[in-house]
Structure formats: C-alpha cells, structure tokens
Amino acid sequence: MRRHRVEPDLCSYTTMVLAYVNASDMDGAEKFFRRIKEDGLKPNVVVYGTLMKGYSKLNNIERVMRVYENADAGC
Image 1: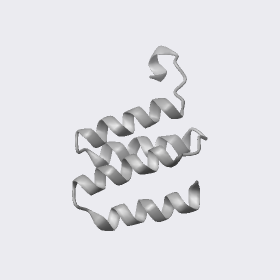
Image 2: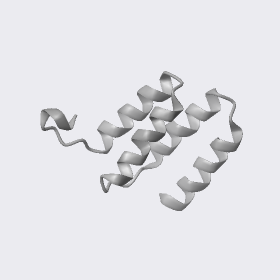
Image 3: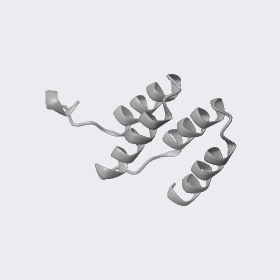
Image 4: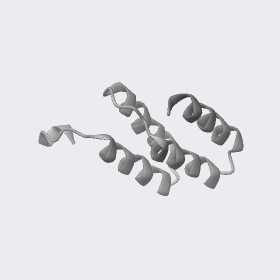
C-alpha cells in the first residue's frame, strides 16, 4: 500500500487481516496485526474478533483465549 503513496488506516489493516484469516494463513494475519501497532494505530474489537475467528477455524483454542485476553486489555 505504501508503494503507491496510500497511507493505510485501521480499515485497510483489518481488511488484510481478514484476507489472511480467510486463507487460513494466521502468520500473515499476525504480521498485519503487528503492523497496526507499529504504525501507531489501536486495534479495535473487529480486528481482535477477526483473529479469534481465524484461530477458531484452526481449532486453536489456546490462541483464541490469548487473543481474547489481549483484546480485553487493549480495547
């Protein structure tokens, strides 16, 4: 996105997280989640819910709970 001089916003990052979740690529989803924070944005409930959905699809309940606990502290 930055290559084309478009400054990404939270909606852009959320869309990318969702795309990776839909592809069952949680490493990619986590990468974009980290970039949200690196760019000084605050993840919202939609971002956390999207990550939880991805880990749920993979039956990784431990990660779902970790994201949930971080969401509770971060939102």
